Structure formats: C-alpha cells, structure tokens
Amino acid sequence: MKPSRIIISGGGTGGHLFPALAIAEELKFLYADVDILFVGALGRIEMTKVPAAGFKIIGLWVDGLQRKLTFKNLIFPVKLLFSLIKSLFIVISYRPNLVIGTGGYASGPLIFVASLFKIPSLIQEQNSYPGITNKLLSKRVNTIAVAYEGLERFFPKEKLVVTGNPIRKSIGKGEIDPIEAKNLFKMNPKKQTLVVLGGSLGARRINQLIAERLDWFKSLNIQVIWQCGSLYYDTYKNLATNEIIISAFISEMDRLYAAADVIISRAGAATLSELCCVAKPALLIPSPNVAENHQFHNAMALAKQNAAIVVTENKLATDFEKAFNALLEEKKQKEITQNLRQMAKPNATKDIVNLAQELM
Image (tube, rainbow, N blue to C red):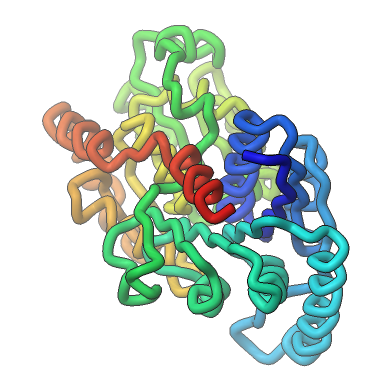
C-alpha cells in the first residue's frame, strides 16, 4: 500500500473508541508510513485516550440528541452546523484517501462530508442493534463491517461484511497462565475467582448487587476481583479484604481475563467480543440506560447461542442467585465456553484493515 492518509472517527464511549484504536494500531503495524488522523467529539473520552496512544486528534463541537427536552437539544442544530463546517475544512485540508467510522457523534458529520467528496469510506458497527449514526451513514458509505449476522434489516445487504469486533492484541493472544494471573493479583490460585466488570465509570446497580452478596460469595468459597468504576470507588473501597480486590479501573485486561473463572459484566459490544475470544463463562447484566437498548440485544445474541446467561436489572432481586449458581455448574461452563469459542472472531481487526486496503 502506498503512503496514505486515513481519518478514523469514532468515540464518545469506550465501545466506539477502542475498536477505532485497534484498527489504527493494526494499520500502523502493517504500514509504518500511513498517516492517521482521528476526529472525535470535544470533551469525550477520545480527546485524552487517542493522544495517549500516540495519534493525532481533532475535536468537533458535537453532541447527540437527548431523550427529553433539554438545553442540549435546543442547541443541537447549531452544534451540528459547526461540526459540518469544521469537518469540511478537515477533509479539504487533510485530503484523506479513506475515512473509517466506528460510531459515536463525531463520525456522523465527518463521514457525511467525506461522502460528498466521493472519498472511500467504511463504517464498523459493534452492536447487534445499530446506533442511529451508523444507520444514517449506511446509505453513503462503501462498506459496512459488522459483528453479528442478520443486520441486513438495518443496512444495505450488498455492503455488509461480517468481521466481528476489533479487540486488543494482548487479549486475543490469550497467552497468560490462569495461575500466574491470579498470583499477579495476589489471589489464591486454587480458589474460584469471580471478576466483576461494570465499565470504566462503573455500574451503580451491579455495584449494589455485589456489595450485598459479598458474604454469599464467601460462603461459596469464591474470591472476587471487582472493578467498580471511578465514580464508585470511594463508596466501596473499604469492603476490600484479602479475598476481595476492589479497584476503580484495571488496565491489564489480559491478566484480568486470565485470572477469571467466571465473570459478571455489562453487555457492551467490545466486552462481549473479548469474552468470546477468552471464552470465560459470564453472567451478563445489560445496561438499560443506553440508546436503542442495544446492550440487551447484544446480550441476547449470546444467550440465544447458549454462550452466556442474562439477567436484566429489574430481575436481579429474584433471579440473580439462581442464575449465578447455574453459571457455577461444570456442565454449563463447558457448554458456554465451547459456544463462545465458536462465536469468537479473533482476526476481526485484520479483516477490517483488509477491507480498508481494498477500498484504497
């Protein structure tokens, strides 16, 4: 591939950002002379994470529509207009050979403007129920890389390629020994370990659930590594013991997955793709506070393949203990592990980069 200029736009949440970073890192690994520019939303996670990963980024003054009448909704048209104008200047000055969108507010204006100039474009949809930005862009882009089958009801069928979601290389390799990983976290290597994931900020209802059940987990002879999120760490940090590790955020996800025997998690698309690759039995508690309830649809896509157990937040009080006990059954764990491996797409990043290369 000749030296190329590529714009990658996506973010707002880790679920949109981390696939974008994985694609950028793969492009840089394969083609040292490629020039990559990120375009994100001002004030969102990408404005700090992208520079930390060594890439340039430009921010747009853009936001999404709220579900109720707010001041943000009133100024939405103004922000959209400013973002379209800035995207125009970015595209004209940078002159990309390709644009890639991974979802989020910023990718809408940028890819729309790029399409006006007939610049080849690709979007990557992480969820089994697409967000509004990618649905709107689907008619204007050349290729749509998706993680799940059956998305032709949302997107033009002729543009769809099922690739899976990009995941971090260290997780895909799965080279860390579970006993070694438990030792790294100073846990008993002979005990079953529950890992709790609620996202970088944390999940209020999951944290409440875990705090209420700590004695119950102890009675089951289970030790816990609990990522409670930065918003909740001060609330729960005093509950830590030798068998309960509580952290705001754990960056060594490859080690964390290796240490886990079972997992309780939200159902973000990136997390579920990682779970498929590491093949660890999980109980999923989808967030009800996301657009189009996409976490529920993501979780059910796994549950229908007997690759996870799902309990919604409104059923936790009545169904959690029964569901968790089912997750501990050896037969159930073997079934889930086998089905997760069948759903895994560890080469998703390479496949998406190949699609990008074809477009150029």
